Length: 311
Length: 286
Image (cartoon, rainbow over all chains, first blue to last red; front, side, top):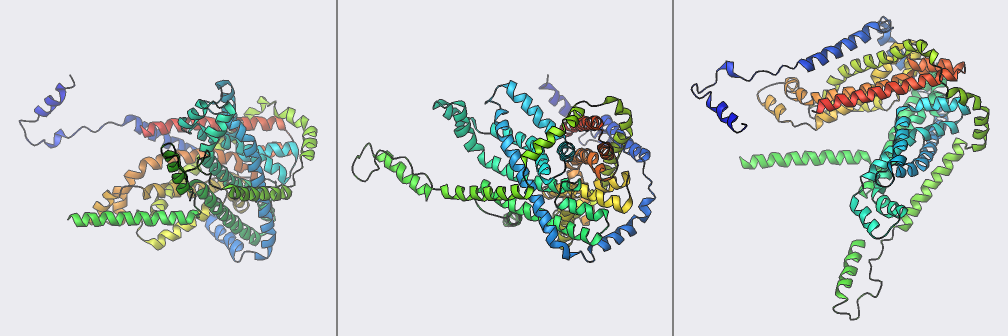
């Protein structure tokens, strides 16, 4: 049947050699996608229409924004920079310590959640726990922690620790499962026990990925710790929110610059160590990006040259 | 070094049975282990040093923690018993959270589209303009959402409008980065053809690049909506509307059985949205 149909379709237009304008393929009616677009538009319009916002505030916004930006950055209060750096250090310390506790707790748990190493009875509850922890925003965990144990930098670090267990656990068991079966089979064949399989078959292979994930999580934690400060856990965030509340705008401007610069520096440093772990060489992420860009350009040029030489 | 050593010793083991003469390695013919011990020791020391420093800075005190936890047992009991009768009162805040997320997403993806074309090397031939917009977007992206929210709350006042602004700025950075990177990776043949027929860059991008990037654009929009639902539940903590504001209120009055209900609701919304978005993305790929 299928073999016949193409021949019939090719034969039918043969009397008229050139297909007329009426014979172009019928446009598929995309009813379902039109309906989805309609639905999306309706939802957006409904949201705009029903939300409790007085849009008049928009009219004065531009001049307000210019005014406040002027207050903040012309010039920023550099005299408070030492305080800001101290507070930043506290934020970074919170992030580091929190991530470390998270690693210590999540590492054994993610091994227990790995397929092939543990039975499903152990695995699924742990995976559920990771999923729930990932779904709760860090700030909400912090609010819970703070209402139980009070407001300190230490509880902020603990909130970060709990928040990072979810992501680290998931990344952990995913990279353990991605380990090639060969190494595990070899260790099993050599008579290794379950712990020895984990140590010599799984861990040695997954190590670079896992270390890189830990560092990446630290980068996320640095951002999170600034946010936790905003709800009172100390560090740069607390200094920011205090100055915003007392409307000391030039200090706020300086602090924002510090937050942005410190986040960028830590991303670069941590990216450099990650590059060392995975590629075996030291390199700043900026340099990697530049190198990749110039390599791409060189490749494009060589393609153009080839094309030119063919002509 | 280690590779050469490995090769030599392997040759040794191969030769041993046949020749068996002097010069070949003895019983321990396995390759010498590369010496990286001191490097990992240094790395370990650095990590340990930073950890000790951070522990001192943070002020680790497990004793006080346990003491507080004992005092807070009442709080914990309230937390594990959510009060469902509070639900009707949370509905307006819940709706506001979703509204903020939808409006924030809609506005930011519309603004982000032209900026992404501006920020991609593939669609913007002017490298100076490219550098400027990329730098600005990097800065915009590195400010946390809650910080935007608290700034807008002081400038505009409490309420959903500040929340929407915070979300828009927060999304803009992410969206522009994702879309401009997608544009960078596109096949530029269509664009080159349009340019060759005499189209302006704007026309070429509109006709050749926009349809190519459209699927990515839609799927990233869904992703941003997902991020926004998460963010809009918490930005209220600094006064920017939604469930967060309610959290702040019940927390100040120590109504923990209300607090746990709100957190439960947040969990439900986030999980529902994740299901929806993964479904939508699957449809999109197909």
